[in-house]
Image 1 (cartoon, rainbow, N blue to C red):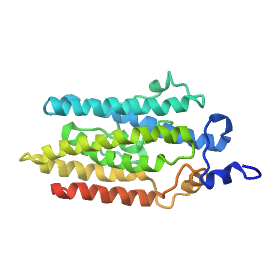
Image 2: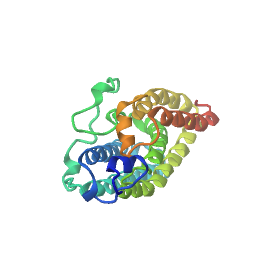
Image 3: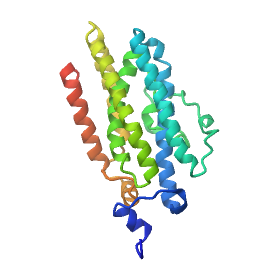
Length: 250
């Protein structure tokens, strides 16, 4: 890097490859990014696990179980990267009650709890199979958009891990869409789906953060973010419309 600072190096697209050459502020932001993903996957898996037996038919139960198991696996993969920075990976899963939820109508700000870094949407309870399928589709699409961003992070081992995870998260959306099509084909299914969409849309939308976030500028300088929150939100919104319109749900 010659006389270039690490921050300049990262801002110009440079990559870091090991904890040993990571500056303290960068380390803190990187760990926060990873903790948010791990906590969200653990909390998401805990929420979906309760609905496996609600799924109609063996095929749908297998799909729900597969999504749950793979979310736990994804959390473990990113947690392994955190372990390279000294995180206590053996005790991490006991940090919080991942199945805990706030009231269904609780304010988003009230849903955030201490050092629990899960996205706020995962503080809300899932009520039955239709609710779980709709959340899986909407949040799954958001996760795919967010992973497209995170695959570009400047810490190369984490970027590689996200690239491995991304195709399976995309598959979760496909499984969810299959379930949603079955739901809307039922006489009473469309109304249930619409009600669930109306509930979950604003909560998933909030996971993209505020427009014009000052923190984005810091993360961008470190090469940990590249696309502004509002742009990611727009991409997600369009993908939701493209997939729900053919089912008459948009």
